[in-house]
Length: 438
Image (tube, rainbow, N blue to C red; front, side, top):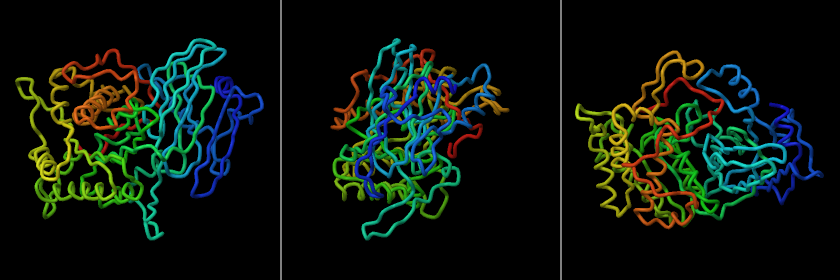
């Protein structure tokens, strides 16, 4: 692996613009520039240096534990750069003078941006996308600060730190340059929700929020603040909405998918048409006060079939409560509840398992028991549902659809992509414990 990294990233040039704790700098790393600073495979990221290879020991340990089913790409690596909070335009040039390539690029917690790009020997292709980077600090209007109260397991996630991390993966990953520059003038899609939305860090779990980035150009950002186990009220209570409000600007959008965990709340005042509806109204009021467009997203279905092969309703009256609040406040709604029902019923009782975390014991290192999860998606399922989100935005005629990539093709949940043809390169992070929520 060290030899491959040295071939692909023998040199980088680092150029700075004005920098302070308030203003981000521009990094440009170019392996084809002979005058560039030499970065050796042994150069790892440190806060003092501000850039470098990252998570090399994790990759090494994962490679030792791989089996016939779970295998890492030979050239996978991570590269991190210390930057302040904000949106960043990342431009990557893929390809190599010496080898054929097939490269996938993800960022932060497995957000998919560049998928299976093939390059011939000596061929180079350039791709750009926007990555949102954040930490837990909230800057308040009076100059004081607060903090998002993240969960213990989130403390090690790539989303809540002081660096932007790029994952280079693929069947034959080749990368010749990376440029990272501030891009805070683009509209941002703020995502709020639970484990069906969150950027899942670990294989084989995935959610639509980390896949929808695949379909958007470098003219729009996605900031995914969702977290496993959250309800609409706990999301607010943890300060997640407060952080979003401190950063959102006119022209942005805020998407809210809740309902899975809310229905399990048993505190006084709990209920679909009580605290749930009130919390949704809080989201809407905060967004509109900042000139931001709120969009409701009804919860994804659980894979619960009746004897006739039809999906059973398991969310009680929470989807209806969301629609009721939407009608009352004039909020548009994306019906993932209906689209995922169609999706699962089209796949059928058995093949619908292919969209969720259903794997026999031993598929992943350390997995002693079979995964049989009927709520949480695997990469294929999350990928398909991200397309449903795009179709929902198109049905609502949201202006943001002007930023769809040229290779996006219309999607119908009644005619899903064949799971047999879906290709995903595993990362080195694995979790045999299911996410919070069900």
